[in-house]
Amino acid sequence: MLITAAVAGPIYGFIVGFVAIMYTGLVIWGEVTVPLGFRIQGAAIAYLSKKLPFPVAGFLTWVLVGFPYWVTTEYYISGYPWELIWAIQIKGFFNDAILSLLVAYALLKIPGIGKYLPISWDSKASRVLLEKGNL
Amino acid sequence: MSEGVQFEEPTSVRTLLFVAAMAALGFVLGSIAIPVYPNVQYNLVLY
Image (cartoon, rainbow over all chains, first blue to last red; front, side, top):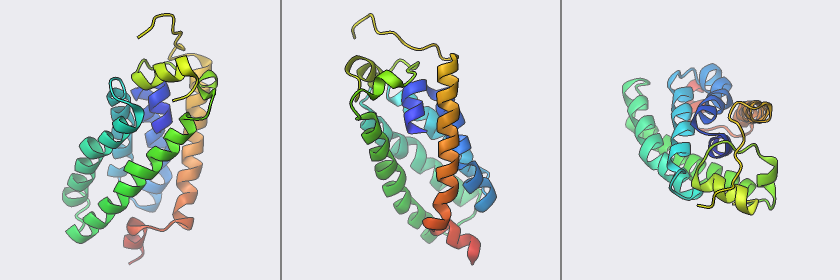
């Protein structure tokens, strides 16, 4: 989702964010809000990476979009107790804001990877990918 | 920002194939992550 958003833009990030979490979010957890949250984050990182470096955009996506979205939906829609919400957010911070981002960043750091990616989204990160071959 | 940077067409076959591949990869990884990496949401479903 993060790579697709950086390379191909918000619409494709939106789509991949939904498909990637579809089975887990809808079937296993039974939460309609989960795929929507991933879609919004997939779109947000594409817009934020227009001006910001990729890792900063990814981290800010979680801080500005992901965290408020999850806390709001988990409290008002899913009705989780606060202890559980904070447990999920602490997990989410390491998972979404650090681990997933580092994996995506490391993959985009592979030398020459930019030549093989269909880069259609004009952003700071994608221009670096096109000109240098990697982030 | 230098000009002369050639962007791919957003609707090109290459882009669509890439998006489909990433979606499929995300779907597979996302679906097998739960059995090998149980988390708090999963435990909520159990109890």
